Length: 422
Ligand code: HAM
Image (tube, rainbow, N blue to C red):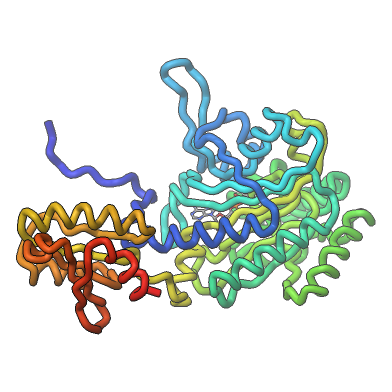
Protein backbone atom coordinates (compact mmCIF):
# COMPACT_ATOMS: atom_id res chain seq x y z
CA UNK A 1 0.00 0.00 0.00
CA UNK A 2 1.35 3.45 -0.87
CA UNK A 3 1.90 5.80 2.05
CA UNK A 4 2.14 9.00 0.01
CA UNK A 5 0.10 11.80 1.53
CA UNK A 6 -3.11 12.51 -0.32
CA UNK A 7 -3.94 16.09 -1.28
CA UNK A 8 -7.31 17.71 -1.85
CA UNK A 9 -8.55 17.95 -5.44
CA UNK A 10 -7.09 20.98 -7.25
CA UNK A 11 -9.32 24.02 -6.96
CA UNK A 12 -11.22 22.57 -3.99
CA UNK A 13 -10.31 24.13 -0.67
CA UNK A 14 -10.37 23.12 2.95
CA UNK A 15 -11.71 25.85 5.18
CA UNK A 16 -9.61 25.51 8.30
CA UNK A 17 -10.81 26.43 11.82
CA UNK A 18 -8.96 29.78 11.86
CA UNK A 19 -10.90 30.85 8.79
CA UNK A 20 -14.15 29.05 9.56
CA UNK A 21 -14.98 31.65 12.23
CA UNK A 22 -15.29 34.21 9.44
CA UNK A 23 -17.59 31.87 7.48
CA UNK A 24 -19.83 31.25 10.48
CA UNK A 25 -20.11 34.96 11.14
CA UNK A 26 -20.91 35.61 7.47
CA UNK A 27 -23.57 32.88 7.43
CA UNK A 28 -25.24 34.42 10.45
CA UNK A 29 -25.25 37.92 8.98
CA UNK A 30 -26.63 36.58 5.71
CA UNK A 31 -29.37 34.57 7.38
CA UNK A 32 -30.59 37.58 9.35
CA UNK A 33 -30.48 39.73 6.26
CA UNK A 34 -32.49 37.25 4.17
CA UNK A 35 -35.09 36.78 6.85
CA UNK A 36 -35.41 40.57 7.02
CA UNK A 37 -36.80 40.39 3.46
CA UNK A 38 -39.03 37.37 4.01
CA UNK A 39 -36.89 34.85 2.11
CA UNK A 40 -37.21 31.22 3.19
CA UNK A 41 -34.56 28.54 3.04
CA UNK A 42 -34.62 25.67 0.56
CA UNK A 43 -32.02 22.89 0.31
CA UNK A 44 -31.51 20.93 -2.90
CA UNK A 45 -29.26 17.94 -3.65
CA UNK A 46 -25.68 18.55 -4.83
CA UNK A 47 -26.27 16.15 -7.71
CA UNK A 48 -28.96 16.47 -10.39
CA UNK A 49 -29.73 14.84 -13.74
CA UNK A 50 -27.31 16.26 -16.32
CA UNK A 51 -30.23 17.11 -18.60
CA UNK A 52 -31.51 19.67 -16.07
CA UNK A 53 -28.44 21.89 -16.42
CA UNK A 54 -28.21 21.42 -20.17
CA UNK A 55 -31.78 22.54 -20.57
CA UNK A 56 -31.67 25.40 -18.06
CA UNK A 57 -28.20 26.91 -18.53
CA UNK A 58 -28.00 26.25 -22.29
CA UNK A 59 -26.05 23.76 -24.41
CA UNK A 60 -23.75 26.42 -25.88
CA UNK A 61 -22.48 28.00 -22.69
CA UNK A 62 -19.03 27.69 -21.11
CA UNK A 63 -20.56 25.98 -18.11
CA UNK A 64 -22.32 23.22 -20.05
CA UNK A 65 -19.71 22.89 -22.79
CA UNK A 66 -16.64 22.55 -20.62
CA UNK A 67 -17.10 23.10 -16.91
CA UNK A 68 -19.53 20.51 -15.62
CA UNK A 69 -18.52 17.58 -13.45
CA UNK A 70 -20.73 15.04 -15.19
CA UNK A 71 -20.54 11.29 -14.80
CA UNK A 72 -22.45 8.13 -15.39
CA UNK A 73 -23.61 6.40 -12.24
CA UNK A 74 -21.97 3.02 -12.73
CA UNK A 75 -24.64 1.33 -10.64
CA UNK A 76 -27.61 2.26 -12.80
CA UNK A 77 -26.35 4.18 -15.83
CA UNK A 78 -27.95 7.53 -14.81
CA UNK A 79 -26.29 10.66 -16.24
CA UNK A 80 -25.59 12.95 -13.32
CA UNK A 81 -23.86 16.28 -12.70
CA UNK A 82 -22.49 18.02 -9.62
CA UNK A 83 -24.47 21.26 -9.58
CA UNK A 84 -22.59 24.16 -11.22
CA UNK A 85 -25.18 26.65 -9.91
CA UNK A 86 -28.40 26.64 -7.91
CA UNK A 87 -31.13 28.28 -10.01
CA UNK A 88 -31.87 25.20 -12.14
CA UNK A 89 -32.10 22.94 -9.08
CA UNK A 90 -34.23 25.44 -7.21
CA UNK A 91 -36.71 25.75 -10.06
CA UNK A 92 -36.76 21.96 -10.45
CA UNK A 93 -37.56 21.55 -6.75
CA UNK A 94 -40.24 24.24 -6.82
CA UNK A 95 -41.96 22.55 -9.75
CA UNK A 96 -41.55 19.02 -8.45
CA UNK A 97 -43.22 20.00 -5.17
CA UNK A 98 -45.74 22.37 -6.70
CA UNK A 99 -44.65 25.28 -4.50
CA UNK A 100 -45.98 27.89 -6.90
CA UNK A 101 -49.46 26.38 -6.67
CA UNK A 102 -51.14 29.34 -4.99
CA UNK A 103 -48.51 31.84 -3.99
CA UNK A 104 -45.26 33.29 -5.29
CA UNK A 105 -42.15 32.20 -3.43
CA UNK A 106 -39.15 34.02 -2.03
CA UNK A 107 -36.44 31.40 -1.53
CA UNK A 108 -32.74 31.17 -0.75
CA UNK A 109 -30.12 28.44 -0.65
CA UNK A 110 -26.44 28.23 0.05
CA UNK A 111 -23.67 25.77 -0.40
CA UNK A 112 -21.09 24.26 -2.70
CA UNK A 113 -21.18 24.60 -6.48
CA UNK A 114 -18.79 22.84 -8.86
CA UNK A 115 -17.26 24.11 -12.09
CA UNK A 116 -14.21 22.70 -13.82
CA UNK A 117 -12.54 26.06 -14.44
CA UNK A 118 -8.84 26.91 -14.36
CA UNK A 119 -8.26 27.69 -10.68
CA UNK A 120 -6.84 31.07 -9.69
CA UNK A 121 -7.43 33.62 -6.94
CA UNK A 122 -11.20 33.96 -6.57
CA UNK A 123 -11.95 31.15 -9.03
CA UNK A 124 -12.24 27.62 -7.73
CA UNK A 125 -13.60 24.28 -8.86
CA UNK A 126 -15.61 23.92 -5.69
CA UNK A 127 -16.92 27.26 -4.47
CA UNK A 128 -19.81 28.49 -2.38
CA UNK A 129 -22.79 30.58 -3.32
CA UNK A 130 -25.67 32.11 -1.50
CA UNK A 131 -28.51 32.15 -4.02
CA UNK A 132 -31.73 34.13 -3.80
CA UNK A 133 -34.75 33.45 -6.02
CA UNK A 134 -38.14 35.17 -6.19
CA UNK A 135 -40.52 33.04 -8.26
CA UNK A 136 -43.88 34.20 -9.53
CA UNK A 137 -43.12 37.94 -9.47
CA UNK A 138 -43.41 39.91 -12.71
CA UNK A 139 -42.85 43.57 -11.85
CA UNK A 140 -39.69 45.65 -11.61
CA UNK A 141 -40.42 46.13 -7.90
CA UNK A 142 -38.94 42.72 -7.12
CA UNK A 143 -35.89 43.41 -9.29
CA UNK A 144 -35.39 46.60 -7.30
CA UNK A 145 -35.95 44.85 -3.99
CA UNK A 146 -33.23 42.32 -4.74
CA UNK A 147 -30.77 45.01 -5.73
CA UNK A 148 -31.59 47.06 -2.63
CA UNK A 149 -31.09 43.91 -0.57
CA UNK A 150 -27.60 43.50 -1.98
CA UNK A 151 -26.73 47.12 -1.25
CA UNK A 152 -27.85 46.62 2.34
CA UNK A 153 -25.73 43.48 2.70
CA UNK A 154 -22.59 45.23 1.46
CA UNK A 155 -23.18 47.82 4.17
CA UNK A 156 -23.65 45.16 6.83
CA UNK A 157 -20.44 43.48 5.72
CA UNK A 158 -18.58 46.79 5.76
CA UNK A 159 -17.66 46.51 2.06
CA UNK A 160 -16.45 49.48 0.11
CA UNK A 161 -15.98 49.79 -3.63
CA UNK A 162 -18.62 47.33 -4.82
CA UNK A 163 -20.45 48.88 -7.74
CA UNK A 164 -23.58 47.91 -9.62
CA UNK A 165 -23.68 47.23 -13.35
CA UNK A 166 -27.08 46.99 -14.93
CA UNK A 167 -28.47 45.96 -18.29
CA UNK A 168 -31.63 44.66 -19.90
CA UNK A 169 -31.71 41.79 -22.36
CA UNK A 170 -35.26 42.42 -23.51
CA UNK A 171 -37.69 39.61 -24.30
CA UNK A 172 -37.71 36.72 -26.75
CA UNK A 173 -38.80 38.59 -29.87
CA UNK A 174 -36.28 41.41 -29.53
CA UNK A 175 -33.53 38.99 -28.65
CA UNK A 176 -34.35 36.96 -31.69
CA UNK A 177 -34.23 40.02 -33.98
CA UNK A 178 -30.99 41.14 -32.34
CA UNK A 179 -29.49 37.68 -32.71
CA UNK A 180 -30.24 37.60 -36.43
CA UNK A 181 -28.68 41.04 -36.87
CA UNK A 182 -25.60 40.03 -34.88
CA UNK A 183 -25.07 36.91 -36.98
CA UNK A 184 -25.39 38.94 -40.18
CA UNK A 185 -22.97 41.58 -38.83
CA UNK A 186 -20.28 39.20 -37.57
CA UNK A 187 -20.64 37.04 -40.69
CA UNK A 188 -19.48 40.08 -42.68
CA UNK A 189 -16.32 40.25 -40.56
CA UNK A 190 -15.34 36.58 -40.21
CA UNK A 191 -11.65 37.36 -40.75
CA UNK A 192 -11.62 39.39 -37.53
CA UNK A 193 -13.24 36.72 -35.33
CA UNK A 194 -11.16 34.56 -33.00
CA UNK A 195 -11.72 30.80 -32.66
CA UNK A 196 -14.25 31.11 -29.84
CA UNK A 197 -16.27 33.71 -31.68
CA UNK A 198 -16.22 31.73 -34.91
CA UNK A 199 -17.51 28.70 -33.09
CA UNK A 200 -20.27 30.73 -31.47
CA UNK A 201 -21.26 32.74 -34.51
CA UNK A 202 -24.37 30.69 -35.22
CA UNK A 203 -24.91 28.97 -31.88
CA UNK A 204 -24.59 31.84 -29.40
CA UNK A 205 -23.62 35.13 -31.07
CA UNK A 206 -24.62 37.17 -28.02
CA UNK A 207 -21.71 35.67 -26.11
CA UNK A 208 -19.28 37.11 -28.67
CA UNK A 209 -20.11 40.51 -27.16
CA UNK A 210 -18.73 39.26 -23.87
CA UNK A 211 -15.29 38.47 -25.35
CA UNK A 212 -12.32 39.93 -23.49
CA UNK A 213 -10.03 39.51 -26.52
CA UNK A 214 -8.50 42.97 -27.16
CA UNK A 215 -8.24 42.27 -30.88
CA UNK A 216 -12.02 41.96 -31.12
CA UNK A 217 -13.05 45.03 -29.17
CA UNK A 218 -13.38 47.27 -32.20
CA UNK A 219 -15.65 44.96 -34.12
CA UNK A 220 -17.69 44.35 -30.95
CA UNK A 221 -18.09 48.08 -30.41
CA UNK A 222 -19.66 48.42 -33.85
CA UNK A 223 -22.08 45.52 -33.43
CA UNK A 224 -25.87 46.05 -33.59
CA UNK A 225 -27.26 47.05 -30.20
CA UNK A 226 -30.03 45.17 -28.47
CA UNK A 227 -31.24 48.51 -27.07
CA UNK A 228 -32.36 49.43 -30.58
CA UNK A 229 -34.59 46.34 -30.76
CA UNK A 230 -36.21 46.39 -27.32
CA UNK A 231 -39.99 46.14 -27.04
CA UNK A 232 -41.87 48.91 -25.22
CA UNK A 233 -42.85 46.62 -22.34
CA UNK A 234 -39.26 45.61 -21.64
CA UNK A 235 -38.10 49.23 -21.87
CA UNK A 236 -40.81 50.33 -19.47
CA UNK A 237 -39.82 47.60 -17.02
CA UNK A 238 -36.21 48.73 -17.17
CA UNK A 239 -37.09 52.42 -16.79
CA UNK A 240 -39.21 51.69 -13.74
CA UNK A 241 -36.44 49.68 -12.16
CA UNK A 242 -34.00 52.52 -12.67
CA UNK A 243 -36.48 55.01 -11.22
CA UNK A 244 -36.87 52.94 -8.04
CA UNK A 245 -33.11 52.59 -7.65
CA UNK A 246 -32.70 56.34 -8.05
CA UNK A 247 -35.39 57.01 -5.45
CA UNK A 248 -33.38 54.85 -3.05
CA UNK A 249 -30.08 56.51 -3.97
CA UNK A 250 -28.53 53.30 -5.25
CA UNK A 251 -25.97 54.30 -7.87
CA UNK A 252 -25.59 52.09 -10.94
CA UNK A 253 -23.81 52.03 -14.24
CA UNK A 254 -25.63 50.95 -17.40
CA UNK A 255 -23.52 48.39 -19.20
CA UNK A 256 -25.00 47.31 -22.54
CA UNK A 257 -22.27 44.67 -22.83
CA UNK A 258 -23.38 42.80 -19.73
CA UNK A 259 -24.88 39.58 -21.13
CA UNK A 260 -24.17 36.93 -18.43
CA UNK A 261 -22.87 33.43 -19.06
CA UNK A 262 -26.12 31.51 -18.61
CA UNK A 263 -28.84 31.43 -21.27
CA UNK A 264 -31.94 31.64 -19.11
CA UNK A 265 -31.93 35.40 -18.56
CA UNK A 266 -34.25 38.00 -20.05
CA UNK A 267 -34.88 41.67 -19.22
CA UNK A 268 -32.98 42.79 -16.10
CA UNK A 269 -29.46 41.47 -15.57
CA UNK A 270 -27.00 42.86 -13.05
CA UNK A 271 -23.58 42.30 -11.56
CA UNK A 272 -21.93 43.75 -8.47
CA UNK A 273 -18.24 44.17 -9.22
CA UNK A 274 -15.10 45.32 -7.49
CA UNK A 275 -11.71 46.20 -8.91
CA UNK A 276 -9.99 44.94 -5.79
CA UNK A 277 -9.96 41.20 -6.44
CA UNK A 278 -8.01 41.15 -9.70
CA UNK A 279 -9.63 39.38 -12.63
CA UNK A 280 -12.37 37.70 -10.59
CA UNK A 281 -14.11 40.90 -9.53
CA UNK A 282 -17.78 39.86 -9.80
CA UNK A 283 -18.97 39.17 -6.28
CA UNK A 284 -22.68 38.83 -7.02
CA UNK A 285 -24.72 38.43 -10.18
CA UNK A 286 -28.19 37.63 -11.40
CA UNK A 287 -31.23 38.73 -13.28
CA UNK A 288 -34.70 37.91 -14.48
CA UNK A 289 -35.52 34.49 -15.98
CA UNK A 290 -39.15 34.69 -17.00
CA UNK A 291 -38.89 31.77 -19.45
CA UNK A 292 -37.04 29.21 -17.34
CA UNK A 293 -39.92 27.77 -15.36
CA UNK A 294 -41.81 26.87 -18.54
CA UNK A 295 -38.61 25.61 -20.11
CA UNK A 296 -38.20 23.13 -17.26
CA UNK A 297 -41.77 21.95 -17.75
CA UNK A 298 -43.77 24.18 -15.40
CA UNK A 299 -46.69 26.48 -15.98
CA UNK A 300 -45.13 29.74 -17.22
CA UNK A 301 -44.25 32.10 -14.37
CA UNK A 302 -41.86 35.04 -14.16
CA UNK A 303 -38.89 35.00 -11.77
CA UNK A 304 -35.85 36.94 -10.68
CA UNK A 305 -32.77 35.97 -8.68
CA UNK A 306 -29.09 36.30 -8.03
CA UNK A 307 -26.19 34.50 -6.40
CA UNK A 308 -23.12 35.74 -4.59
CA UNK A 309 -19.73 34.11 -4.51
CA UNK A 310 -18.90 33.57 -0.86
CA UNK A 311 -15.13 33.15 -1.31
CA UNK A 312 -14.94 36.44 -3.20
CA UNK A 313 -17.06 38.33 -0.69
CA UNK A 314 -15.02 37.02 2.22
CA UNK A 315 -11.79 37.99 0.47
CA UNK A 316 -13.18 41.52 0.29
CA UNK A 317 -14.35 41.46 3.90
CA UNK A 318 -10.82 40.50 4.93
CA UNK A 319 -9.28 43.25 2.81
CA UNK A 320 -11.57 45.82 4.36
CA UNK A 321 -10.52 44.62 7.80
CA UNK A 322 -14.04 44.38 9.19
CA UNK A 323 -13.84 43.95 12.97
CA UNK A 324 -14.96 40.41 13.52
CA UNK A 325 -16.71 39.11 16.58
CA UNK A 326 -14.31 38.41 19.44
CA UNK A 327 -13.20 35.19 21.05
CA UNK A 328 -15.15 31.98 20.74
CA UNK A 329 -14.65 31.08 24.38
CA UNK A 330 -15.82 32.73 27.59
CA UNK A 331 -14.11 30.56 30.17
CA UNK A 332 -11.01 28.36 30.29
CA UNK A 333 -10.96 25.88 33.17
CA UNK A 334 -7.52 25.02 34.55
CA UNK A 335 -7.06 22.27 37.12
CA UNK A 336 -4.45 20.09 38.79
CA UNK A 337 -4.92 17.05 41.00
CA UNK A 338 -7.43 14.23 40.95
CA UNK A 339 -10.13 15.83 43.08
CA UNK A 340 -9.64 19.11 41.21
CA UNK A 341 -10.09 17.27 37.92
CA UNK A 342 -13.42 15.87 39.06
CA UNK A 343 -14.68 19.27 40.20
CA UNK A 344 -13.35 20.90 37.00
CA UNK A 345 -15.39 18.73 34.66
CA UNK A 346 -18.51 19.22 36.84
CA UNK A 347 -17.81 22.95 36.96
CA UNK A 348 -17.44 23.15 33.17
CA UNK A 349 -20.85 21.49 32.66
CA UNK A 350 -22.42 23.85 35.21
CA UNK A 351 -20.98 26.89 33.46
CA UNK A 352 -22.36 25.60 30.15
CA UNK A 353 -25.75 25.15 31.83
CA UNK A 354 -25.43 28.85 32.63
CA UNK A 355 -25.02 29.64 28.91
CA UNK A 356 -21.25 30.16 28.95
CA UNK A 357 -18.82 28.86 26.31
CA UNK A 358 -16.24 26.79 28.12
CA UNK A 359 -12.94 25.13 27.29
CA UNK A 360 -11.98 22.53 29.86
CA UNK A 361 -8.24 21.94 29.91
CA UNK A 362 -7.44 18.38 28.89
CA UNK A 363 -4.12 16.60 28.90
CA UNK A 364 -2.60 17.68 32.23
CA UNK A 365 0.53 19.86 32.62
CA UNK A 366 1.66 22.41 35.19
CA UNK A 367 -0.57 25.34 36.21
CA UNK A 368 1.88 27.61 34.43
CA UNK A 369 1.62 25.81 31.09
CA UNK A 370 -2.16 25.51 31.44
CA UNK A 371 -2.44 29.25 32.09
CA UNK A 372 -0.48 29.88 28.90
CA UNK A 373 -3.10 27.87 26.98
CA UNK A 374 -5.86 29.81 28.76
CA UNK A 375 -4.19 33.04 27.62
CA UNK A 376 -3.94 31.84 24.04
CA UNK A 377 -7.56 30.65 23.94
CA UNK A 378 -8.93 34.19 23.99
CA UNK A 379 -11.15 33.32 26.99
CA UNK A 380 -12.28 36.32 29.03
CA UNK A 381 -12.06 34.49 32.32
CA UNK A 382 -10.21 31.46 33.64
CA UNK A 383 -11.33 29.23 36.44
CA UNK A 384 -8.46 27.75 38.42
CA UNK A 385 -8.98 24.66 40.57
CA UNK A 386 -6.36 22.90 42.68
CA UNK A 387 -7.03 20.12 45.19
CA UNK A 388 -7.15 22.77 47.96
CA UNK A 389 -9.99 24.58 46.30
CA UNK A 390 -11.70 21.32 45.38
CA UNK A 391 -11.63 20.14 48.98
CA UNK A 392 -13.25 23.41 50.09
CA UNK A 393 -15.84 23.23 47.27
CA UNK A 394 -14.45 26.49 45.87
CA UNK A 395 -12.81 27.72 42.70
CA UNK A 396 -10.55 30.66 41.81
CA UNK A 397 -11.93 32.99 39.14
CA UNK A 398 -9.39 35.09 37.25
CA UNK A 399 -10.24 37.84 34.73
CA UNK A 400 -7.81 37.40 31.85
CA UNK A 401 -7.50 41.11 30.97
CA UNK A 402 -6.10 41.89 34.40
CA UNK A 403 -7.96 42.36 37.67
CA UNK A 404 -7.97 40.52 40.96
CA UNK A 405 -8.27 36.77 41.13
CA UNK A 406 -11.10 35.86 43.50
CA UNK A 407 -12.09 32.72 45.30
CA UNK A 408 -15.77 31.85 45.23
CA UNK A 409 -17.97 28.93 46.13
CA UNK A 410 -18.36 26.55 43.20
CA UNK A 411 -22.11 27.12 43.03
CA UNK A 412 -21.58 30.90 42.76
CA UNK A 413 -19.09 30.68 39.87
CA UNK A 414 -21.64 31.20 37.05
CA UNK A 415 -23.00 34.40 38.63
CA UNK A 416 -19.50 35.74 39.36
CA UNK A 417 -18.30 35.05 35.82
CA UNK A 418 -21.42 36.51 34.23
CA UNK A 419 -20.86 39.62 36.31
CA UNK A 420 -17.29 39.88 35.03
CA UNK A 421 -18.19 39.34 31.38
CA UNK A 422 -21.11 41.72 31.12
P1 HAM B 1 -23.01 33.11 -11.90
O1 HAM B 1 -22.72 34.47 -12.43
O2 HAM B 1 -22.56 31.97 -12.74
O3 HAM B 1 -24.58 33.06 -11.70
O4 HAM B 1 -22.40 32.95 -10.46
C1 HAM B 1 -22.73 33.84 -9.41
C2 HAM B 1 -21.50 34.21 -8.60
O5 HAM B 1 -20.85 33.03 -8.14
C3 HAM B 1 -20.41 34.91 -9.40
O6 HAM B 1 -20.69 36.29 -9.50
C4 HAM B 1 -19.18 34.66 -8.54
O7 HAM B 1 -19.14 35.57 -7.45
C5 HAM B 1 -19.45 33.27 -8.00
N1 HAM B 1 -18.69 32.28 -8.80
C6 HAM B 1 -19.02 31.74 -10.00
N2 HAM B 1 -18.08 30.86 -10.41
C7 HAM B 1 -17.13 30.83 -9.45
C8 HAM B 1 -15.91 30.10 -9.27
N3 HAM B 1 -15.47 29.22 -10.17
N4 HAM B 1 -15.19 30.33 -8.13
C9 HAM B 1 -15.62 31.21 -7.20
N5 HAM B 1 -16.77 31.91 -7.32
C10 HAM B 1 -17.51 31.74 -8.43
C11 HAM B 1 -25.26 31.97 -11.23
O8 HAM B 1 -24.73 30.98 -10.76
C12 HAM B 1 -26.76 32.14 -11.26
N6 HAM B 1 -27.37 30.90 -10.76
C13 HAM B 1 -27.18 33.34 -10.44
C14 HAM B 1 -28.67 33.52 -10.43
C15 HAM B 1 -29.53 33.14 -9.48
N7 HAM B 1 -29.38 34.06 -11.41
C16 HAM B 1 -30.65 34.01 -11.09
N8 HAM B 1 -30.76 33.44 -9.92
